[in-house]
Image 1 (cartoon, rainbow, N blue to C red):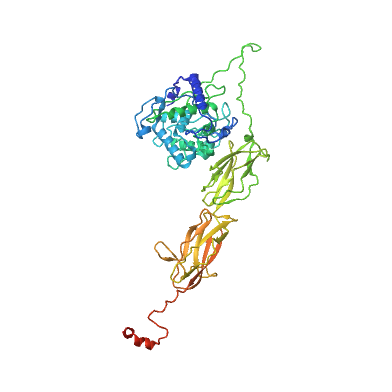
Image 2 (cartoon, rainbow, N blue to C red):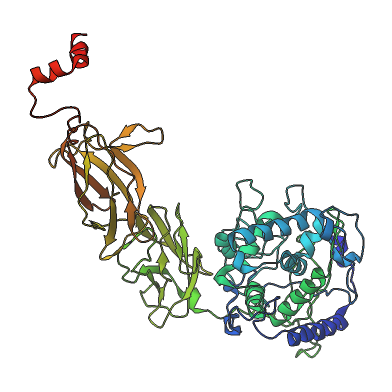
Length: 589
């Protein structure tokens, strides 16, 4: 495959100029924050990454990318866009996307439409990024499950012409235990993949070299921070967060608009291959292109020039100039992380944690280090997130060397989990914080009415029992509750006589479980019935958190039946019997 990358498409500066004009016209035609439907909304342009955003904060480490631009003519829309069928490869060759790669983009966008519908991620954006990052996985050079047949690696990020990112994965993804390199068809640096990686093909692994995994990860990465990609500012913020370069943004936008006009599927391994890279004309040392495997034979090293005027005759060779050493950054001085006074992290399900995590970066001597990026990652079996719905947050330390994570928002899953603090761009031991989510609870229960609850034996109670649960004075919603008809105040076991509920089959039951208060903290119990036992009985309602309410129920005897109209109180029994032969006959019988 590497031979393909020696072929130039010869677009060069002309294409760059055309793209700049095209994108400028596109931007001019769209007012900021105007959606595809013409409605204003989205995020302000200030949400876009700033010009000084560090390479650690981008998906690719701001690695080089392909600058090849789409043809000026629009592609021919394929029949598949209207019929759903898979057509033969037709139309402009640049519009062809390898089948497996195209499938990965569409499945990733469909998944994001379900999990983050407000993002409005178009699959064409994934295709545009995949084009400029790796030429669609090196022209679709992937296996049936979407894994690249050979590694796709960016240049070594050693600060020599590129960002300086020391190793963060011990070479697990990029094979380099000294510096990081962007990896795979979507070119994630290992430190970003560590939290952004996804399993897109359901094989139980998160592999940056698999196009299904990488495309899904890219979708989630672009949809973080609640960006709406149907707005101009949201789209700009997302693209610049992937690689913080205006030229990169313009190139991706040009491919996005091109693919939106129509694409078609081509067989894997037959996609067109780009050749122009953003780092080809820069002054520093270049390295192996991101889509070309490392060369097996190093190029010959040119001999240094000689100096003919050496005293005493002859020539001399000047000493070799050592490579420039990148200046130390604040991150380079960090030796360890310290807790900066984080209190106990506990919250009830559905509530926000009142305490925030604070971490301090320090040198070996214990001196605080400012302007260092600390990444907080939620790990463990939990649906708790940071405010905004993300499970990762990167924060810059202040002048005291302290980074404070966003507030945690508890989900419905109870139990403990971990929030892990790490230094972005430096391998120092992580600092773990334990957080706990407890079940929703109530500390008080009360009836909503004071109506006496009475019933005659064998009848049914006219009023249903309704209670309200509160916690610290506020309505306690979604709190689990139990209702039991107990024997007495001292014996809380279920009674075997007196009032009862009915199950779905009409059978008598005297304990109800799996009850839950509604959004207003209210709970209405099913209708109560009475057997033939009279007296005063007790209903006890309890909730998670210990709130208890005991309700009295009264069952009275049924009234006796009235005398028959044929009977007269003044008549003696004998008179009545003699006056009524039929009664005598009945008695005799």
